[in-house]
Amino acid sequence: MQLGGLKQTFLIASRGSRIEFDDVSFDPRTRHTVWTLIIGCSFNILAEYSFNQALVQRYLCVRSVRAARQVILINGIGIIIFILLLSLTGLVIYAFYANCDPYTAGFVSSSDQLFPYFVMEVLSNTVGLRGIFLACIFSASLSTISSGLNSLAAVFIEDVYQGLMRRRLNDEQLGRVSKIYSAILGAVVILLSFAVSYLGSVLNAALSLGGVFAGPIMGVFFLGFFFPRVQRRSALVGLLSGLGLQLWIFLGAQMTKNRGQSGRLPLSVTNCSKFNTTTLPLASMTTISYANE
Image (cartoon, rainbow, N blue to C red; front, side, top):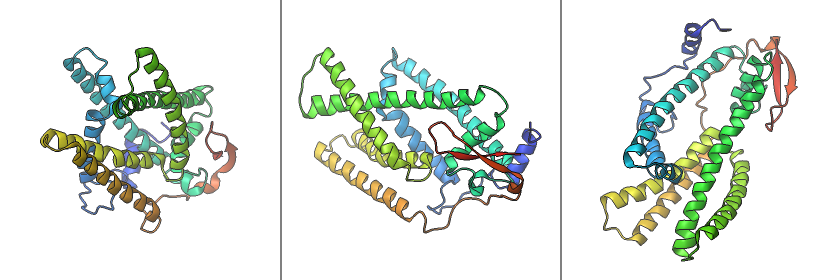
């Protein structure tokens, strides 16, 4: 409403080259093109919905294969709506700060803080909504982390504890061991979150690390589907080789990301002079500068 409606929002975003559907570049250094989105996202979604333990354990909780297919269909529709809303939110935030980008102006220390910063400013006059927003972020994060830790513990107990180590436990013992492993893995995740904070954007780092591990695992599944005569040792060598190559690419990209040209589109700070900056603590995030007109 403050921007003048959706039409004006899209017009501002279009003038800033934020709406592109025709980038067909084959340059592998270009992060988002038609090919990376269609091919890359297809394999990413395939790995997520076909071979990810966190998703597979959900399929096993329903009564039949038909019900599992219905769940995937419903989830797909919801994901499409969700991504469209996220894209619209990004366009609104860009249009809102088209003439004074908070990140370039130094009002926030990371691009990941733009969305919370935007919410804090727009909802500053509405009591309670900012708290609800932060509560939604933390509750969504906790629900995702809890299911992920549960799936990691299940895989470790089934494949390592009972598989490689050949331990046999009853249901009560399995429950106790699962809780212990969940606590240990939770501590590891907390330590890794500190490491990820030094890799730039949290979203980019998470997607990159996910691809590092998901690619080789998906390769092993494809190997089993199409070449069932391959022996276990050969599959393990292929898995470790693929993982090593992926880690080399990932670490190399992180160490050299500041040497090449930035892929960011230009941002403006022409109207930032009219802002008076104060500080606003944002939950557990780093204190950021907050602008009031």
